[in-house]
Length: 104
Image (cartoon, rainbow, N blue to C red; front, side, top):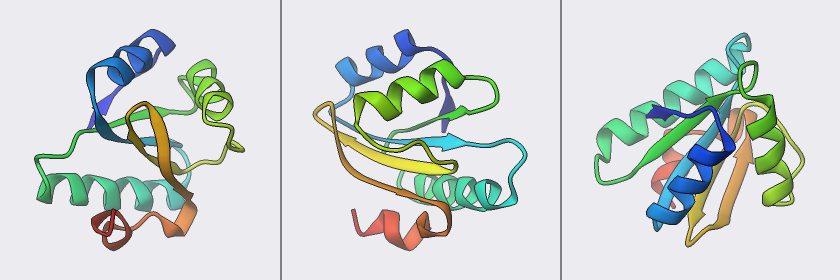
């Protein structure tokens, strides 16, 4: 999973990738750590899928931009599946599991 930090990086990914997973990750929250591990495990088992994340403590501007862009309330952890530039799925906290990601 690749870490990004800026709106420009995110917009470039939106233009270049038809489908990808994205996660808002807190560096200090144990629930977020668990969700991050679930996402990473899923992506390691599915190398054909692309995954990116931001650390909310380091990328607040990007985090706020994503909440506004996809019209969702900011949460952390929060995961998205982006397809054709739109959020086709998003979930937060304990609902971010490898099994849930597999079903998408």
